[in-house]
Image 1: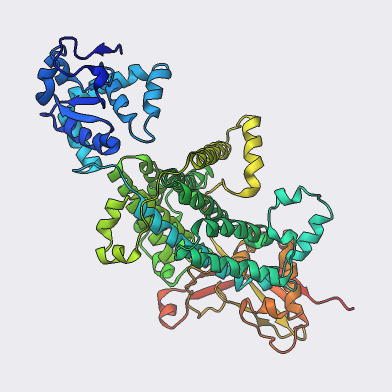
Image 2 (image 1 turned 180 degrees about the vertical axis):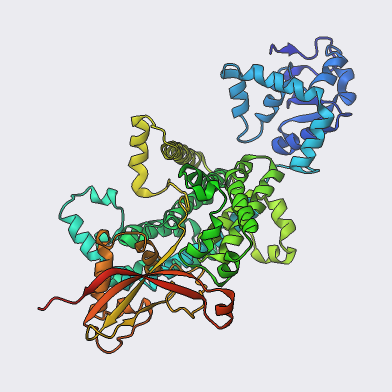
Length: 614
């Protein structure tokens, strides 16, 4: 659009002396006033705002029809712009909003599309006003996230605390010097095969020391740093060290640290670190993580081709076959078939449709938040998924703004939080660094999603994604792509003579038929989970399983401590074996008599073995 002088016939002070630009809008238009008030809050005192009813007489060169048709922007040099260009010129005075003007002036076709869209809105202003109030509320104001980010980081400290403490109480039996998969063995093996590049391929502190003390030090230091984060003490340093320490545990944990929630925690932890430096970019990156996690969880169900998802029968099996059900899962599994089909359809809708509302106007984001919270709450009530659902629910907090959260929380609690003063705008170096990290994360996540959808990204793009892959700041997600329809359980037995066999009992996975499924949120019992996955695999492909049986034959205290009941507390068994059972929920009559499970022997999973003679 060509600029024209605004005061050709005089009426205002010479444009060269104007201190600020002026935006003129229609004071009789509710839509114009609604957005003018919002822009004024964005731009502050850098732009003057007046209705044309107030100042039209001062601009006789501008026809009244122009004022009624579109907003008018009068620059400090006296030149005029209108419609979409005037809007973008106004927004360019707000921090971070100059991109729109740059696109208008430099991106071919953007200006024409913008003007067409503006003209359409201008001719439908009453309807657009109603839509604006519906989507953003009566009084639109620039969103603030000081309270939201403060609460998120404090609560995220609790998520980290759960993860570190949970692993700490199991670490010696899993990866200690006498554990199932000693990390010291891993370090020695790789050190003998790989040179200095091992520090980048598997970044962890255990390259320097992999002893039992170091394992415990890493776990409990992580727990201590989590507490510091909860109380807002050295938050940035705490977040950095928490990320480094948990990344170390991810690699040291080997087969016991191959779960999506571990990489999910790492990625969220890195983005939380960025959030502590730059609030708005951090908020959007964490929303992008939530979108990818939820949307890909839905897409993998469809892409897998599993008929149970396509025929809406998946939840008819899920509540029985999931790794560690809660007591409420028994009741959920006995819901009417129509209710389970409805729940399956609702799950797919929430995972596939609601994530797109994350990037929509304010009130649509709220719809996404409440829908995702509902889904996560149902999962949390019926399945033990450690801190997984809690972390996802916490990410939903970022779909709200301070104004919304203040309505949900008691004013006394907000005052008691003693929020720090709003942070000043980050320094340019910080902004550049965060922007570069954000661009890299978004780019690599798009590459990863393209690959997941069966695409073949350019080789250069794949190389960039592979370079940062060891850091786990971008990860692939997708839950329950294929639904298991039967629950096979491995029951390990020991014997002192090869004739009488006694069962080992795990703390959380099904075993004893009369034991009620326990609750273990937010704890992650990693051996119990591995046993669920082992039931889906060939034991010859699972080196850790044979090592586990070996430790039982040795009666290794750090390993037997992971179990609920050791039938050989005083003397190690001579033999151990593993049998395969088909487990199902007991019927109502059996449950009323105290029996939660029924089982049927399928055969031998692992033959009877004993320790070799010296």
